[in-house]
Image (cartoon, rainbow, N blue to C red; front, top):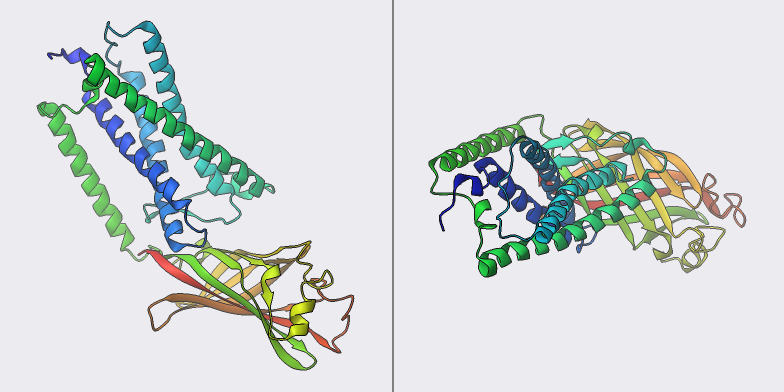
Length: 386
């Protein structure tokens, strides 16, 4: 079928269309798969960073695409297309544009407001700042949860519209046999199009090379994500050092060894998972006077600042919440590699059970149970950027 130049979209519009399509398919596929993984899975953390990278790239390309669209008139619709189909297509295209902005923006807000405070590392190289003022709002956890729902809803809606968009394009091509699909396909027979593709490829190669050089520079951080975790404690019970542990814990962390201030740690402990070889301790600690596991099913630690002591040690400042009390804690955390090559973070700190109102009704003195309790932790870390 012979086509006049006005029947085709311009080369730049075609390139924008297919670039954005590739990144959208990538972010949707990664997003659906990563959410099926356990939250403590290192792979999920790595995929989350790639998902956010694809989303921000879609946002950037969409801004450029929209600017190009406003300054370059698209080809007219074929005269054979009924008016109602043109109106439906216009609504679908408008929704696509809205979602191409809404999905990255809602994701960015969700990440910025998240209590986990995990940085977005664009393609594991460039740190993207949180959107102000969401990271500093007092109700940021609620905002993050709300925008998580908006983000998921927008993603599902985009999938439906994309399926309809693809189905309509195939219907026009295979059944109606018009030029709707063909006019958006790359024109490989055109020399100007080949020049633009060559220039784009060279630009991507140069940008990739620059990012690799930056990634290998001294100022590039090693980004680590938390994996399996263990939390235990030692209490003085009738003069004996009595150990205990929590079997259900999770840690989400980013550890920037080059710039420790960019690091963050959030740990959650299910209080009902408490165990101890001392049957009296194991039986008493879940009670309301002690951990009150029914009223307070989780204990939580969130770092507030992390600084470097040496290459293998970080000083962690944070807030520990047990029951209804939150207290500041501080401790050194060591990073090491075990014989099997697994990277591990370890640390310990002391708490005063008086400060958390633990056992103060039945054991208000140290006669049988000491006030000081040593908390120890360990979690696996997996390297996701060099």
